[in-house]
Length: 112
Image 1: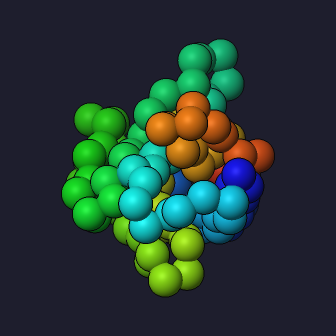
Image 2: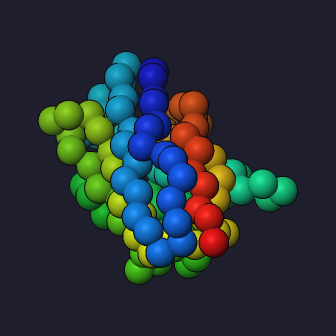
């Protein structure tokens, strides 16, 4: 199994970023997927999940601002992040919950 998150960077508060998770080594289209983040000084938290059928759920802190999506043909998942806040700063990971597996993260830094 390989998961690789990318697309992080430095953005001003109120700005947007789109994270991409490319995958291999498992049957992507039949698996639920998740986005997690590690904010400095806090435990890793679940940000968003998207089921194999495209049903999404979000942490309260990102509802209305973040949107998870997936392209099964490309074995890829996305996280569109809008109206970013400084408290969104952290390392973002994509995860395969069925195997309790996380790939390397991508840093998101939101400046005030």
